[in-house]
Length: 85
Image (cartoon, rainbow, N blue to C red; front, side, top):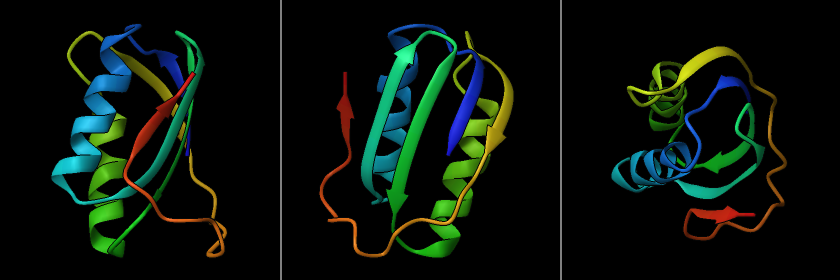
């Protein structure tokens, strides 16, 4: 997923990580700026869809402008959700 908008700085990665943990999703997030994030998640399809919906809403201080989803690569290693700087 590629997410653009006013993501709310440090609060957004923590919020995303918590949602992924609640939904038992594996993957990672990179947030090179306060306006852009790249997220890769794996898990049950319905839970991934729920995660995408949650990300479109974001935490209270975020204003999501757009989300682009792309099919993932099944060969990517599955691990606990982590934040990359």
